[in-house]
Length: 154
Image (cartoon, rainbow, N blue to C red; front, side, top):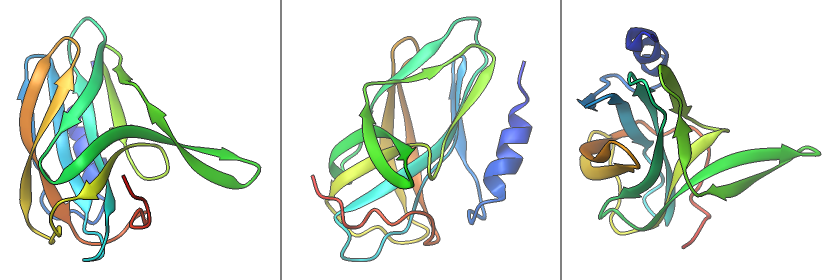
């Protein structure tokens, strides 16, 4: 089985000073966070590590939070030197594995932000899994950095 301590160490290497997370059943969510976007941003990206300690695969099929009008799962694809985001219906979490939602890869896209996001704030979020069900936690607003998603709109 995978050691979540290694994932936590990787996530702590990012600008986040204090990581947080939650475990429910076989699923562990490690440091759900959003790098602080500019104050006028209409969109932002969210990241985290997801660990499946169970014997069966699970799938992240949705995310809910009041901080955005629409929240999707995306992946960044590169073709001929051009990057584009593609919506995903779900993210597969294999048994005994960790999946990272991170810049320039799979990530959470929050569109139509309903409030400015300020470094240090915590905002409620619910991750919805096919097997594990609904897992409530919080997005931490981390220091600014990462990809600029402020030009995206709902």
